[in-house]
Image (tube, rainbow over the protein chains, first blue to last red):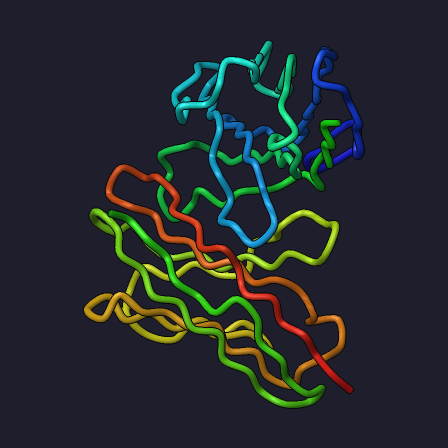
Length: 116
Length: 109
């Protein structure tokens, strides 16, 4: 399998649930990202891992917890979410976070999250 | 602050040409990207400009003017499958990506 794969594609959860989103890439990339996409808003960068080290945490609430066990896998652990957290969560990877113009992002299809 | 502006929505006719404009304000500049995103799908890379001028790739071209903080994406010979959102983003001096909200392009027969 090639590209960036995200699971699950759709997730409905209550505010007291704990769930996780998974992202996997088979491109040999060294940087992985979590983005939040809400309707008619710019993509919001949440977390960046470069060579398995977290390099960016964009003031994300602690109810979102990332995990990067190796350069091919990225998780987003969710707990006690709020309805306003409902959005499309996109995972992406790139060769290297600081590669400038070579830093083309390859995205997964996203996980559509609904918090009730 | 850092900002990207692009129109929210545009409509064009199949077979025609459309130009999607983008203006940017960033702290330093390391290039401008365009991505395409079909509804329910992943954004995919279209183009990257770091020098002034026009880059052509088949039916799609991207233009950059660094002095004006301005870029456009030009789509020729529009096809129905070009209906999508087009995302403009700039890379600042720290290699941070600043995203626009996207332009939803609707193609009519």
